[in-house]
Image (cartoon, rainbow, N blue to C red; front, top):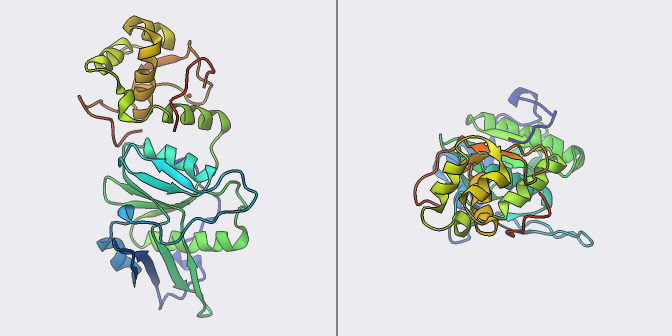
Length: 280
């Protein structure tokens, strides 16, 4: 997880009418809106497979609008509403415990202490291998959304606590880490794994930690081997420090995620100008 805001709060501290509880609003597979008791919906519905319950806004004058992120975890596209959200999708897409991702699949509805109806649509949903889930917002800065967003965050956190789930306002990524992650993400698709046997040769070359270019040249031409190395780094089969800029002498070693022979690496967890880009 990339970070948590300081706005805490448990169910007892949130301005929610406890008698009314929470409700979930979402679209069924044919696009019809459904409204259910929150706890019932969260047990029965795979939110990670649903379309957005409402579209991401398009803000005039903003350089980056809503787009699609191809997930190496699911092999499908996830709607991303901002650069900040796309960055958090990259982090979660590399997490080996994440099995599903979706953008804005559910609207949370509740009544406040005065009986007024309130609602919020968290930007991001992630399913974990143990069945638990994360609802998250991805603000571009800590104060984004103002007081309304912070109050909604408290309500969403309380709703998630009822199920043993988590809610987070994810902090923006540090610049170098984000740049490295974007670089490796360009090589996340299966086509960059390399020729049959090539991935095994790459892993063998970095069975002990060594400089990037040294290990690459031990396998073959950098033009053909580097994409496979970046692919392995994205999927966690190889490891490198992403907190410092990548370059040809950076140390690369064995990863913590076992590679599956013949797989694309689905389900896993940086940017020198001399490397040629893979594209997102």
